[in-house]
Image (cartoon, rainbow, N blue to C red; front, side, top):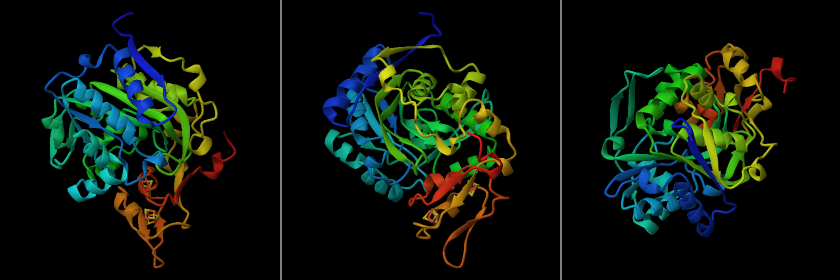
Length: 376
Ligand code: SF4
Ligand code: SF4
């Protein structure tokens, strides 16, 4: 095998029962050469989960606690100390994270395993002279106090990047509301994807895992439907892990903006798939948002002026006027009307889809411009 070829491991895993998940996680590390290649005794290892919001794990919005627990136990067996962490949408504070840890099942994981839940809410600044989009990044301060990072994505559709896995997951190392600033700064989706790759190059995860036991299709990353995929994926290269994950839901690298950026920048390695046969796991009718992310359409759509790109539509069926969308909007394009229903100024909207991503009531849809509505 040439030096450029890395392994991307996949194990079939049909349930979140620990009897299924633990051997599968252990096998991912073993198939990639053994956990000792990535985690050393005595290290403090940040396990970067996807904890987008306070959600029951059954809704498939967040990394499942059974996956987190299996990784924690593997890291502990390797003689290291795992720390569970994420910076979800909203303020990066102790109070906010306490609710997220509890709702997403991570408090219970900590109680069962004795692992730490990150309680350091400081920030740190990293400089990247080689960054393509970002030369300076403000990130969560706990990164300064760990020796290694494992990124643990959840396989879901995503309105902006088409799919979220291990690399997009690292956007959660940007603290709280700083994410809003970055959306405003990196409005073009190619630039935004380059910025995500810069974060990945800065954080340098030692291993990447995708929770694809049950993923999310449709209006992901928070408003879609759970869909059984039945797989766990692991690789020392996060781009290879994401490319394998994309393949399982019928997407090519060109259709996922982070993978397209990795390809363009020569960061997507050749990889060999090890573990279980993937053919039975591939889902050919996985519902991708807007039905537009097919073939070369993703590239065309991402080059269109904003006015032609899919826009957020506030449905006003389940909305309780919580205001999360207004606080999340980097363009300040949303106002609350007199009935306490949010209204969007589509001319100001930069199509970042943060409002849809963070709406706790899943009351915001992303709809195509009518000009493109007949195209699939
Ligand atoms: S649309 Fe969603 S986020 Fe916005 S106010 Fe209503 S419930 Fe809250
Ligand atoms: S309205 Fe929604 S999609 Fe538009 S800029 Fe604001 S948060 Fe982003």
